[in-house]
Length: 339
Image (cartoon, rainbow, N blue to C red; front, side, top):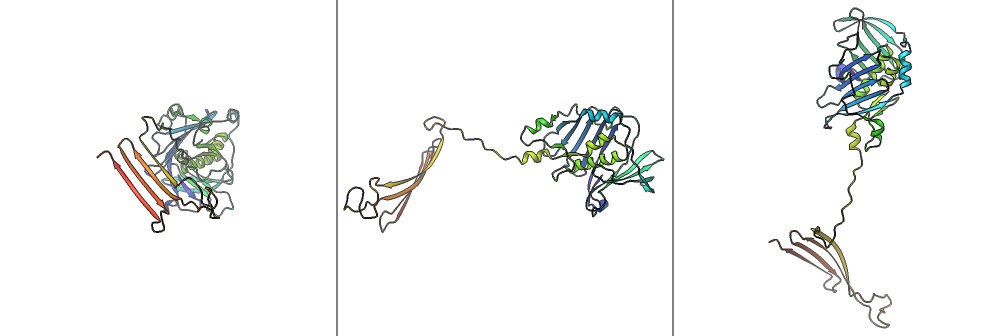
């Protein structure tokens, strides 16, 4: 599957390439889909649509294990969908084209997708198989809208096999260790699985590719309407990215008894004034009495750092306004009891 601008050239590297598998049991209403970009360390997505729920498993290179969420669906909609006749859509025959070694009939379904998109279908009557699907943006867009070109190298019509994709997906999400979306919303980071009419910029492209495949499959009748509509609105965001965006919290410091054995180091800064008695008075009179000269006071500041465990101490102090000839004095004391 090539996902990118509709006016781009997939063969020129202008699209993201995604590969995967697709299987559907039309009678039981079960769909299985997988997708992953064709690059090292790419994110892989597996989807299991069952009557009443949709489960999605995401495997990212930054996560130690795959994670899974399950979203309950309206069971009444699924039940009604089973009894509805297959949605009939009319395609326009556009001739015969060669896809690989097959001669395939080309049909166009105009504006019938979930997002008013058009779908192209290439179908081989000789092999009774789908050759290719293409999803095009709605008419009137300049061609830069997101489209998808879906090649189908192997198409097997017939009954649902015991394990349709050879990876134990038939019974999924039985072994996926899923949380519900409601549970995820109550946890830091929130839920990365939802159903939306339009994918946000943060949606994983592999999931966008699956939604395009589901939309095209619904238009041409490969999926029942309810299943196609649900999967076409599938939005999967990166679980690891949501956790990485959480605000960091720092645990509050544990108070330590300054006279207890747990105290190992401490430090503080200080300031001093000498003498303490009396305050300078602007009028030339001090608080000690009228007519006396203003009290001159010296100011100092410093810091102390103590390492009790290693028996070390550092003291720095400075005094200002000592005299007119000595405006500032600084002294430093270093004690090393560990030597």
